[in-house]
Length: 208
Image (cartoon, rainbow, N blue to C red; front, side, top):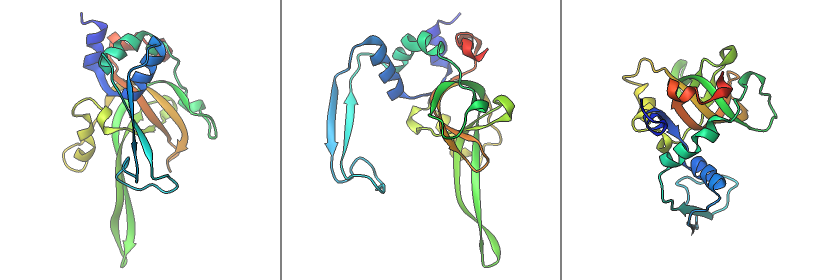
């Protein structure tokens, strides 16, 4: 039987490294050495954002252990956190943190416009989505490509060519935001996503 650390390693789909590092610091009480670098003239971003200053600060921290090792130490506490009830969440609420259980899938939105009397494809976007939640709700996910386990982020561009269907049972700890898409689905930021394997799911009592 694999250890809990091995089960986590084999099951991680998405891991927000900053979230894990912050939780680890708060739990351990020890702060990692940090370097702050000021980047002037908008060098912190390739694109200029309106209503933003031209300077920013980038923080670099150095830890004696990996984020996966941090996660394995944090897992008993993290698994004990409550679930978030998507169906009871309301607009103008504060954001809520919690576990959900569903199916991770991909979703593509294509816009169309009229040009010279003909329908022409316009802007399009692809994102990950949690499906199969209570009352049939979907949750759209705002993700960071570098936080996915190797290979997963390649699924989005494959929707245009090779991918016919993707449905992975997962447990996700996320931050639910008071924001909806045009189909009235909520939008959330995932912090940890693991495959729904018995060795891990049984550790999350809030999902039962």
